[in-house]
Length: 327
Image (tube, rainbow, N blue to C red):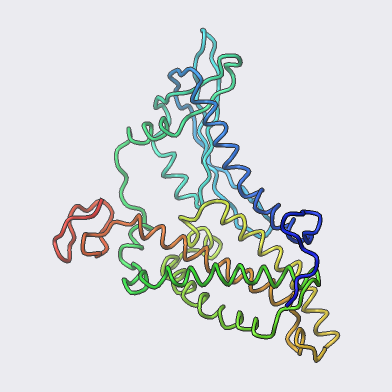
């Protein structure tokens, strides 16, 4: 394989598809960076006591191919210099159940509000204030999803294998992107052994599918991705939704061309071409990685005893061995 005129230090030689990937990455990080900037600025503002007046749950869809996200918000009032102001705090969740739990019993409770001394109508509620607000409520009984994870946890052998499968998935994703960039720009032709990425899909997607089925259980189909991606960062979810759209936009036309103009070349020999296959590989590898990453994050947070046995939420000792629950 031969790279032609790509110079890593000269952006003018970079293929256009690389700019597409960079745009996706920047979009994924834009919101977290903006929230971080708002929080840092608000930490220097004076604080006053506010009160939660009302709560609301709305739906939001960031990409046409994604499922709806649940947006929990509460309206609060605060007073500065004898004048009352209104502010709204929003938080994004995967399911309405999580939003309901976040907003539970908040109406009428007091919350600390940071306000801009130059424009008191601009306000912000810090994470520390939210934590204090939530801790003032009585504990809630475990949700059906939490109990489902307890009664149907991932096997110990599977949790030990998942880090290796995660590594294979991210390596396969990187190689698939490499092939896709080369195929779209015609700057280099992948050697035939890159078809091993076909086999790699089975090595990572079937374990990811098993994990997803374990986590989702009898979840409604429209909430499937919300449940199996619970625990993954937002940018990872947004990138997955964008890749679904990208795979359809790039892969489907290539498949149509391949069926209409069959060729005996290694790139198309009756199966499609490098562009179509690499677009599909990208989606499969990244979706597998996202599912496995989210599952491992939730497994780390789920209560287990010192011997590794799963425990129901709120338990102090293991029902199997009597050992204390790890904190």
